[in-house]
Amino acid sequence: MTKRALITGITGQDGAYLSRLLLDKGYEVFGAVRRTASLNKWRLVEMGVDQDVKFVEFDLLEFSNILRVIDRVKPDELYNLAAQSFVGTSFDQPIYTGNVDGIAVTMILEALRTSGNNDVRFYQASTSEMFGKVAAIPQCETTPFHPRSPYGVAKLYGHWITVNYRESYGMHASSGILFNHESPVRGTEFVTRKITVGMARIKHGLAGEIHLGNLDAKRDWGFAGDYVEGMWQMLQQHTPDDYVLATGEMHTVQEFVDQTAEALGMPVEWEGEGLHKRAVDRKTGRAIVVVDPAFFRPAEVELLLGDPTKAATKLGWRRKVAFTDLVTMMAHQDDRRIGDGTLRY
Image 1: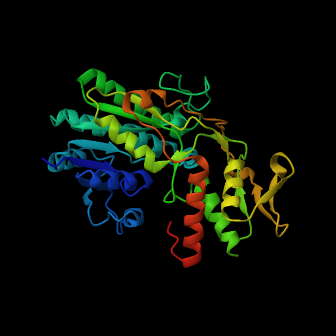
Image 2: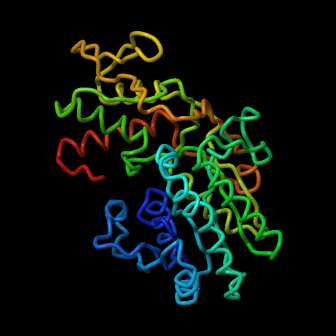
Image 3: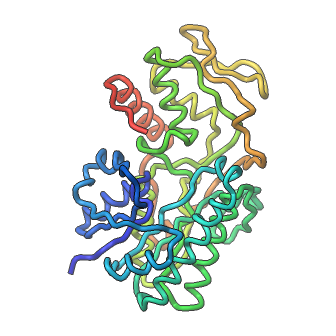
């Protein structure tokens, strides 16, 4: 019998990669989307799966709607990937972020419980931002949480309510504590694509410089295509649980710039310190990356480094794409898109 999966946030980066993975495995995939005048499906188009996904109107903050969709679709697996996912935006929209990233998780779980669909396997997209002001290096499933943004706080609520429903009602509910994962279809609002798109535009003479925040921030960056495999693996386990997915490696934003520059054949050298640090194109002598205080967070998360031992041991999950290959992949894709005019946002 064909399995059915319902995915919220299907038009985002992870939703697109997960859709392709599940369709390749023979699933019937339903995409939960908000009712809008026009549906932005470009990531699904790029993955070649836009015609294979069945879309259903779904509002994360409307309980009756959630109940009806679950009753109509009757999913075997439900992946909750939808979120207000921009850390910076969460400081400007803390209430909305709390509702979408926290309360909405409760609504979905309660809808599953009250509809009698306790046998549906549920995945909650948690985040390394929940660790925030880290209490240990590296961070694993038992590391204490100390979120440093409304986004991290809201996601922590979503994480703990998932644990609560699992323990209280015996639901097969698991959370993936995913560290930063990127790809050529990452949103351009995120610093990684901001860098690869910005430097490709500079290479093609379409921009002058990129403004970035904390160049010394350290992150554990992996490939989104690897991470969605871990999501699926979690829901295939007999016993639900929570897992960290990470590479176990840490790189600075400055290193991401350096690797992008190398991939695009425009190496840079760094000048100055602190707010006056800048990257200068060796060929032209022009500053192409500058520090802008406007992009600093009110409360900075200086470093995140994950320990994926549990996922490796229990799921058999391991990342496949290395950091340098990930950055090169993203840079080359954006270079091509800028060159042929196919860049999408």
